[in-house]
Length: 133
Image 1: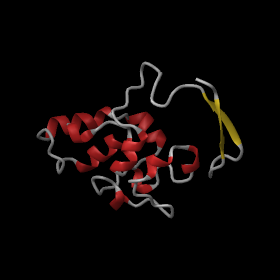
Image 2: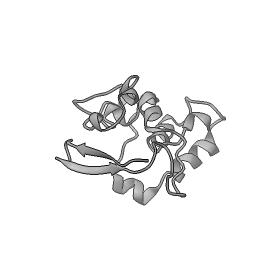
Image 3: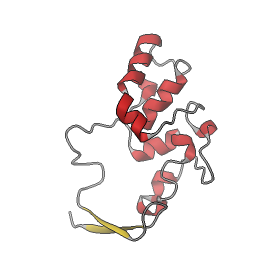
């Protein structure tokens, strides 16, 4: 694959440059096994509509076609399960996602999307498809 340059201008970075060196969705690190793509996550409505709102130019336009976006602020009503399941990165690094998947598996009938909605939404935020649990 020919290296494609990308210039990033978003809220966190100005004129940051990197090169795409791998085909989209391929050649991930062996420990990285997401069940959902960024496009699927956007279509399922994650992070209260704030997921990737300031960097749309950096990614394929079709990722955002069905996304519910909230440029102004985080809006939990836009989440797939309609609940706030957001925490800081440091919280997730300390607690991990295993806690949420364990709660769903231990307390919910399979495919019961009304059971443990906050846990299910948190799992979606980490690219695991909690609708299948």
